[in-house]
Image (cartoon, rainbow over all chains, first blue to last red):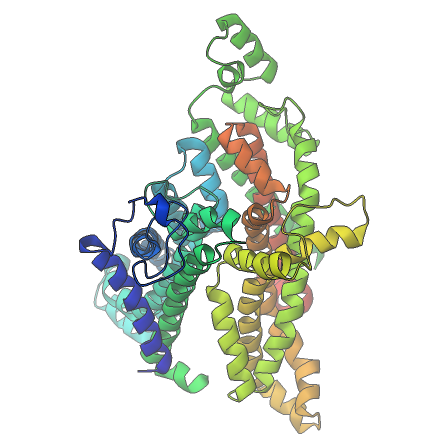
Length: 270
Length: 315
C-alpha cells in the first residue's frame, strides 16, 4: 500500500464515518436555532462554533457530508451504470453506426458542462438535490463511456479475446465476462476521481442555489450563507470549505494510490 | 490541412445544430406559458393571445425553432420576456465581463502551470517535484468559489489591496477593469493551473523516455536544450486538450465566481432569468455557452493538426 492510499483512505473514511454517525447522533439537532448563542467561535460546547441562527456547525457539517456523499455517489452510479455499457457496446461494434452514434452522442453531452445541465434542469423543474444528481450524473456518462471504450478497444485486439470468440462466445458475453473484469481497476480509479469531482460540483451547485434546498443541509449552501458574514465571522466560511477540501483531497489521494496499487507498471513508471 | 479543417468544420456545424435542437426542445418541456407569466393571472384571454402572437408563441414548434436559429444567425436572440429588451444586447453587455474573466483566468492558469509543470518534470523525484505535486494536489481539491471567498477575506477585507466585489466597467480604462477582475481570475485560475501543471509534468515525463529524446541528447544537446526543442512541442498535444477543456470549465466556473464577487456577467443574468422564468434568456445563454465549448474544441482540434501533422491524415 502506498502512502497516498493510506492517507486518502483515512481522510475519506473520516468523512464517510461522520456522515454515517450523523444518522444516529449529532452533538446538537442540526436545525435547532438558538439565537442568543449565534455566531460563536469554536468552543467547548459548540466544537466548531455556531452560525447566524445559533445552529451548531459541527452537526451541520456532519449532516452536510450526507448530502455531498449521496449526491456524488448516485451521480457516479448514473455515469457508470449508463456510460460503461455504452462504452462496451461501442468497443464491441467498433466502426459501426452504433459506435458512431454512441461516440457522437458522447461528444454532444460533453459540450454541456454540468453547471449548464443544472441550469437547464432547474429552468424546467426548479431547484433541488435531485437536479444536482441528474446534472452531475449526466455529465459523468460520456466520461465513463469514453474511458471504457478506449480500454476495451485495446483488449479486443488481445489473444484471449480471440480465444473466447473461437469458443463461440458472442460480443455481449465477451464484454461482460472478459472485458469488464479486465477494465474494472481502471473504472474503480475513474469512479473515485468522478466521485471527488461530484463533491466539488455539488458544492458549487448548492452554492449558487441550484442544488439541495433548505432545510437539507449542504456544504455549498453553508458557504453561500457565510458569504455576507465572512468579514466578522470567517469561521462560517473556513469550516465548510475545509470539509470540502478534506473530502476531495482524501478521494483524490485514494484514487492516485489505488491506481498505483492496482497497476504495478505505473509504480515503476513514476 | 485545408481538407482536414473543412471536414472538422462540417462536423462542427452538425454538432451546433444538434445542440441547438436539444436546448430548444428541453426548454419547450418547461411548464407554463411565458405570455400568461408576463401578464399575470388577471390578464384577459385575448390580451394573452395577442401577446402570444406578438412573441410568435402561437406558431408550430418546428417553425419557432427555425425562427430562433435563423434569428441567432443574424444576431437576433429575441425579446426578453421580463425586460422587453433584445436578449442579444443583454448578453453582449454581460459577455464583456464573463469572457474577459475566463480569458484572464486561462492566461493566468497557463502562466502558472507551464513553469510549474516543466520545473517538476525536470526535477522528477526530487524535493522541488514533490513540493509542486503536493501543491497541485491541494489546488485540485479546493473549490474555486471558496478560494474566492478566502481571497476576498485576505486581500480585500484585511489588506484592502482590491475591492471585495463589483466591476468598474471598461470605460475607466483597462487597468481599472482588470484590477477588479484580478481576484476573480486568480480564484478561477489556480485550481485549473493545478490540473494543467500535472498534465504538463506527466506529458513531459512520457516524452523524456522516448527514443528521439535520447537521439537528441546523443547528438550533443544538453538535457535542457532537448527539453525545449523536442520535448515541449511533443508534450503540447495532451496539454492543448486540457487547455481546450479548461476553457469551458472556466466559462462555466466564471458563472459561479461572478456570484462571489457580485460581477454583472452571464452568471447573474442567467440566475435572474431562471428565477423570473425568462426562459428565452436561459435558452440563449445556454446556447452561447455550448457554442463556446464546441467551437473551442474545434479550434483545439485544428491546433493539434498544426502541432502534429500526423493527425491531419488520420481522421
